[in-house]
Image (tube, rainbow, N blue to C red; front, top):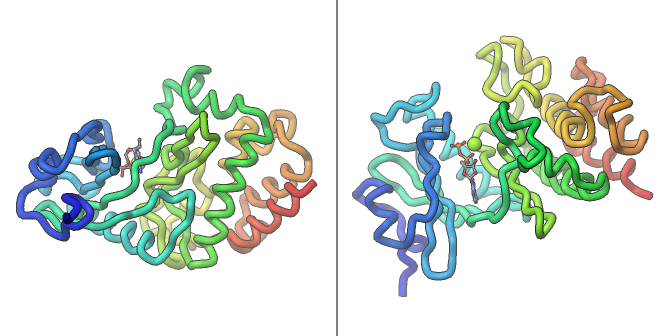
Length: 279
Ligand SMILES: Nc1ncnc2c1ncn2[C@@H]1O[C@H](COP(=O)(O)OP(=O)(O)O)[C@@H](O)[C@H]1O
Ligand SMILES: [Mg+2]
């Protein structure tokens, strides 16, 4: 028997009308998403899926047009089609709808580490609960994140708009998943915006400069900042850093304001991190 979701290539009604006919819509991510995208958690039998859409063509959403949101979803689909990693929820299929593509991903259990600014100091937030974990547990998740990015870098991808809202952590299983890499760019590119999309806590200095090149060195900065936020105070303040000096040294090079002084690629950063992690 064909699967109502996975064997479907095209629908002629809107996603929000179609999805309740194939299963139980148990989660909706719509108005709260400043991206303008509308996404759904859908249960079909015992399986759960995360279905991501660009939202209604006439809907107001974020700073991007519907056509731009559709283009980003197609970009994500192209990344997921050519690249797989255990930390990336699998993209099962893409269904064409009158409102653009629906990307059907595996559902991931866990909590989003990115929380609104006003909750960031709250000890009960997933962000602070993650930061309070033992250094070894946090480092294990960073290993996963950096191994994934080493492989993405090798495949030619440059990170964009990565922040803690791209991380789902399962505290019980101690497993990290990376979502929403829709803005990742195949190959280096020029910053045409000035301040680019993204969370400033994770952005490299060149992501604020119109005309600057954004490449693997920018991604290295973002990855370094991630560790500094989880294991320190988000800066290179050595007294706030909970990890060993060997890791601090790798992060100091990764987060050098001058791109040329950083590791030249995500792969080089991942190798240096791996060596520094070795007992
Ligand atoms: N594979 C997934 N499994 C479970 N929840 C997910 C998955 N992907 C995303 N989410 C949840 O849906 C929210 C919106 O997804 P996201 O890809 O970030 O969309 P947007 O482009 O709207 O930011 C995320 O913040 C996260 O809470
Ligand atoms: Mg998001």
